[in-house]
Structures are given as structure tokens and as C-alpha cells.
Image 1 (cartoon, helix red, strand yellow):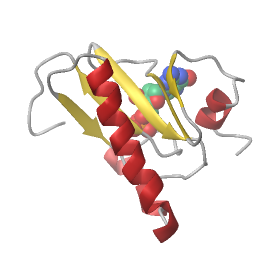
Image 2 (tube, rainbow, N blue to C red; image 1 turned 135 degrees about the vertical axis):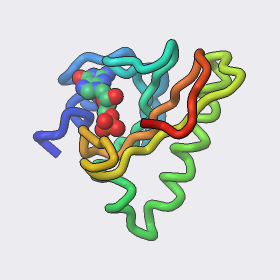
Image 3 (cartoon, rainbow, N blue to C red; image 1 turned 30 degrees about the vertical axis):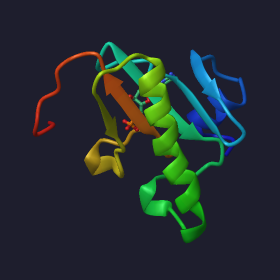
Length: 112
Ligand code: DGP
């Protein structure tokens, strides 16, 4: 998508600190980290959100979670939180599906 920030990061048109680049998934550090480790795991395919998932996307979305787990391990996180904001009301601000990997501090529940 020509007007999507994360598509531009994936294409190298907007700089980001990449931590992983696979065939169909990338991961880069969040520009406004909410924890000592805050990484976004993103499919290369433009998919707006979980709400836009089709049956054919189930494998890809499952592998986003698996990649998030591997990244948390590589970052040395003892515990971590995965967040997928879906829709504006839930706090989604970039409409290209992404999994937040947050760790390196104590987390509270419920989230704000
Ligand atoms: P969400 O609010 O769930 O849609 O998360 C979007 C995240 O994207 C938010 O935590 C901040 C991050 N972000 C926004 N703009 C940029 C950018 O230009 N570069 C990077 N690396 N992250 C960004």
C-alpha cells in the first residue's frame, strides 16, 4: 500500500531499526518504546488488522506469534507481553497488522 507507514519501512523508504527480516515477516524496534524492549513484528503483506484477517491468513498470523516468541528469546526476555491493538478504539494507530513485543520491566494488569 503506497500510503502505509509500515509498508514504507518494509520497502526501506522510511528508516527503522530492523531486528529480523524473513520471507514474509519483518520486525523492527518501536519508535516510541513503552518498555525497555519494544519490538513490532509485522507481515510484509499489507493486512489492515486482525479484523481484516481471512482464513488464508491464519498460518501467517500464527507465524507472527512464533516469530515474536523467538525475538523475545533472542532479546533475553524472561517474560514478555504480546499486544495486538485492533481498531482505533483499541488504540491501533497504524493500520498495518503488527504484534507488539514488550518486555524488560514488570507489567501491570489490567492494561490501560
Ligand atoms: P498501534 O498503536 O498498536 O497501531 O502501534 C503502532 C506503533 O508504531 C506505535 O507503538 C508507535 C510505532 N510507530 C509509529 N510510527 C513509527 C515509525 O515511524 N517507526 C517505528 N519504528 N515505529 C513507529
